[in-house]
Length: 82
Image 1 (cartoon, rainbow, N blue to C red):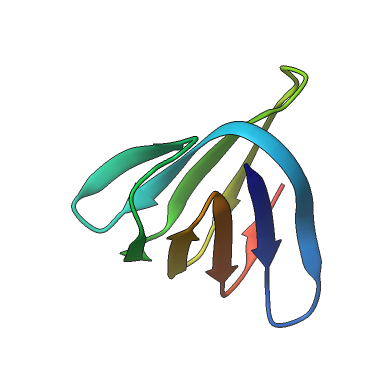
Image 2: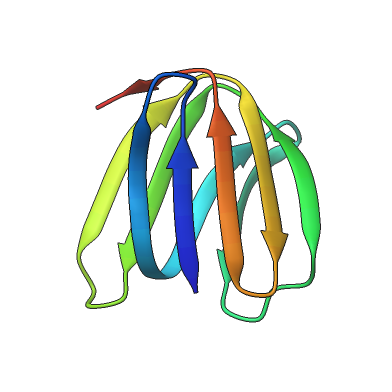
């Protein structure tokens, strides 16, 4: 599955992943391979990515949205703090 993380200024992450955990407005949730199509609002909080090879990346986001379609995951966020 591919993940793309974008802010208005730049691309933060683009690559193959095993999973991504995000801060939804009603609590955290995780996206795994073959997840059903989804669009959801995100709140301020931590994003945790496990890359295809097992490397872990974490960073904090400001508000935004997540879209999942056919193993393509897009995070569109207002800002990122590493």
